[in-house]
Length: 382
Image 1 (cartoon, one colour):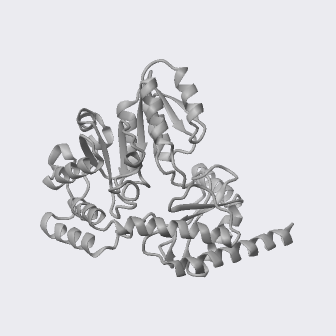
Image 2 (spheres, helix red, strand yellow):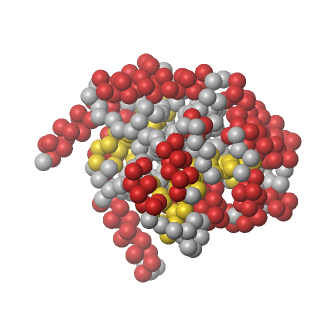
């Protein structure tokens, strides 16, 4: 059967991606984990697995409908109440994913006539939510308080500032305390994506808003990273969460999460409260990994977080170095556009609490060797 115009168009795009070093492939986990977001090692914790298994036997696998139909469960409300107290918020609401939660918040509260100020390195889900909202978007330089302050003075009407607290690809921190102050002065609402910070930062692990003593309007807290399960919880004032229940299309028109997810997340919160050593260990290992990379001559970027970017620039080189590390038994993935800006392809090293200093020693030696090998190859090719 001859190819259709659509097939030819798609195949041409796939060929272009391959020629530019941007073709991706699905690859299951293998080797030592240095790429996932399971920062505290909770995804395979026996208590989390036990609680989920018990909930499957008790409540079944699926919720069978949206929360506003027959999909609501007492376990969802109990989890939301616990999380609201954990975040020091009036109320919380559970979503099936962080992507859906970000779309829900931004399309429900922002609209035509509003202005949304978005950090230039915000996650795709935040960017998409702003686009769908119909509000006017103003992109400000990454983590630039002065620039944001100046931009906020120029616009009338309802204003929103949207940022990640810990940036997923750069590993650096937003200046939330300063943003909070700037937003209060300008009458803007601060919306913070805490996906990579919740469970890891703050005295209780509740995130960087607490650690920075900033309040914000709403926080979006993904549960598939440090919390080790899936879904996301939006936390904020009671009136705002009630409005999400009534008007957020990704909530109203989505099947509720499986009830066992709530049971597993409840176990995760118990472990975060009872085992603060996991956060302490993660911070120790993150600092150690950065120190070892510096010692081996590997340039790193970002702040002193568990996310360590090694920026290589070239798409093909990033892929080749990642493949060498994988052959050495370390699961590190190459991050390329559109996940990052063109010309900033990188390795995203992700530290977790289950690693050891000895493992990090072997890994940093392997990475330094792979970088030298790729540099020598590039020189020969030139």
